[in-house]
Every structure is written in structure tokens, then in C-alpha cells.
Length: 157
Image (cartoon, rainbow, N blue to C red; front, side):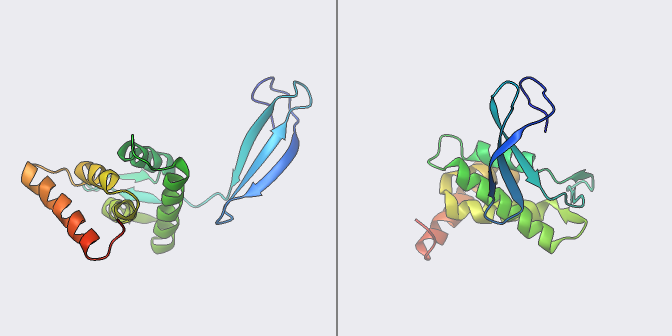
């Protein structure tokens, strides 16, 4: 593995850890030349999964794009980065297990909203407002009322 600092072509593995779902291995490495440490990740290479947009365009599923969108919704909220990463992993795992080559964008969005609803109500409403593209205050207010009704019915507080 090439050192990102001095570009030496060798490194020593100090520690390896597997993710909870065992799909990724995190390796802590040290360069024998400059002695700096860095982290690498090994991930199983998956067959491409295409997301079918509302206008029938297709684009490759992007875990990073999903992570950025959820992080934006959780901005300035008491939600740990680890919780967001776990949510993204769950959504990706579920989508890949349910769909072979193509997944409707709506299916991805609905899974995210389902999980955000349980994680943080404000983040859920933020994500829903972008995802559902509310056209007026009434539809936005209705979504908030639906969230509150769900919490009264035994959802997470």
C-alpha cells in the first residue's frame, strides 16, 4: 500500500478491524520510510446497482451521495456520525438484497425516511421536505402531523 505522505510503496499493518456486518475491513498502517500512520479500508466490490430516477434517468448508486444527504438533514442535531453511517449501511444492505440491478429512487428515499423517523424527527422532516419537494406549507405541516401521530401511536420519542 502506497504511503499518502511520502509515496513509499510499502507499509506495515498495525491493526485490522472488521465492520459490524463484516463487509469492510479497516486497517491502521505505518510507513517504514516516514513513520507516519494512515488508515485504509477494504470493501467487497459489489456489482453496480443503478438508481432509476423519476424521469427514468439512471445513475449508479452512491453511498457517499446518500451519506451527504443524510448528514445534511442531521446537521446541528444530536445525531452521532456513527449512527448516520450505520443508517447508510442498513439502507444500502437492504436495497442490495431487495433489488438486483436497478432500484427506484423512491424505494431508497422511503427506506431513508423510515429509518430517520426513528432516529431523529427533525432530521426526518428536513429530509422529507427535500425528498418529497413540498409545494406549500400545508403539505409540510401535514407531514409534521403524521410524524407526531406516529410518535403518539408508540413510535420512538
